Image 1: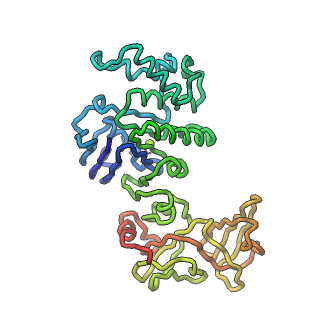
Image 2: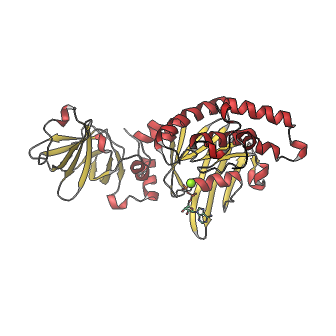
Image 3: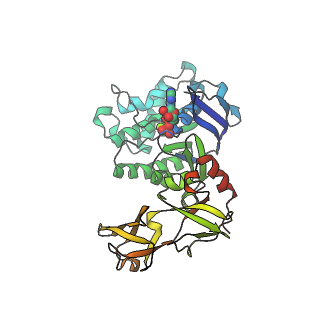
Length: 366
Ligand SMILES: Nc1ncnc2c1ncn2[C@@H]1O[C@H](COP(=O)(O)OP(=O)(O)O)[C@@H](O)[C@H]1O
Ligand SMILES: [Mg+2]
């Protein structure tokens, strides 16, 4: 079931929550919506599910206009972060629920439902839990049951809203691999919402980065990691160091900066900002360097430094055993050599979203 969302907007009491969303999800695709809290992810899912209506825009599923369809006619499978399984029903009955409440004419017979539930229990690797009640399950098991319940109705579209958000890291990783297999075998068209990058990139082939009601970028892990489309995405992807530079013939220039490892950019000459991840910055010892090590701490594997030029303090991470780490201690003067960085035109305080998507569109690496 392909989903086409067109120029969709939504506001709550004058506050814009979705500001023109265009997104197509192909049949059988698993797309992740990735963004910080408040970026509009849940609102978008609710609109697809028919639990919320947009102010404007289109929603077509396999060519059918879904905005004219009531929620119950869309046949959506929905799993929330805190999915309330019915506490008084066994796992079997919870999974069967969506089928047992169908209108009589569409309702499968009892034995068909029972067989379907057994099949799902097996498929989801929860055979042994069928007779339990939700209170007797771990968080991870509950979410497996919740997904079973969503899949039982053979949904046209599967919507998962931070389904693993309340679970601890190890369980999340297990469930991620499990969900990926489930998805490949069911081939359902799935939208997965998360604020966790690792989860999004590991699960989905295509990740949609959302910020403040807009789609900031669509791509795979490498594209988004290496070529963030806006300062927002760069920051969200961990580029927390922002240095003012001047661009000259596509080269970054600043006192105390060695930009020799950065490719030239097709950006206009003038002030710009360099966005760097702490792990992508090498401090090179240089007695006349503008920056100075002000703190130095090791966790055994990684050396975390703080560098200062008197006005700004920046963090740097490097492997403790790397040759570059030798001799770096408090008081040492260094030059900054970024190994990779994103560059956006305009001085730092001008890095607003609307403006920078514009710059990003113009930028192409030479
Ligand atoms: N029913 C509502 N009434 C008013 N504001 C809402 C409502 N639902 C969501 N919002 C607001 O819309 C914004 C986006 O929310 P949401 O879609 O839940 O974001 P996300 O899922 O990315 O965290 C938030 O600022 C939130 O407070
Ligand atoms: Mg949400």
